[in-house]
Length: 317
Ligand SMILES: [Zn+2]
Image (cartoon, rainbow, N blue to C red; front, side):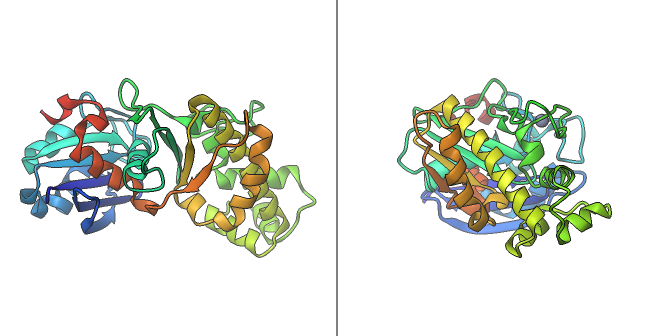
């Protein structure tokens, strides 16, 4: 059986695995993303497995240039400037390396091994620290010029721009509906609805900035402000999903990332309620990512097995 290595370099977590061609995870390793030296950290995690394979797929936070195999000053890593990853990993490990954007990898993973298996047109959205997307159209991943297509987290969902995004733009989807955006959304809703004064409202009033898990927890406990934040999150996200569906005409929109997958009990009903309001020709079919937090890693494995999926055969030479 042919085997490949796969790695997923996220803002917080670094995962790597030895994966068989049928998608079996033979060995899975996790560590935290280091502040400096991401290439060294990947090498440490996989080097004792490298002699069993001839290629590795690397899913990474972007932005990047897949033609040159480099990361371009990624805002979610602490290592700045241009980071050469493909050439250095290839030299250190002695195997071919294929680089791709982590959300694109998530789409390829779900399309090859998960919820989108057998379909031709699939959109994958991931709600994590940020909000990203990967798109498969006509049975092919869309990559863009440098591999940075589908920055849908920066679609404008609020033209009045009540919240400024980490990128500097105003009214972007990610600024409201991601792990990093939810605290800002909660503050905004608290400001706009002073009558909603539960535990969460009082915490915000005293200067706290509650994180995403505590907002969802408060909603489950019936906190009125938290419930309004979850409703607003769902309405904005339904608008974003409808816009993405209008752009790509997918058979299925797959929703992943911890902010969505851990809170489906609160979100699914509301999304179903709001989505028809914003959709062209009926709401798109939705499904949760079945590979959980391993979707990008599995997509990296699929790209190592079929480098054409990641666009550039030149990457592997
Ligand atoms: Zn933005």
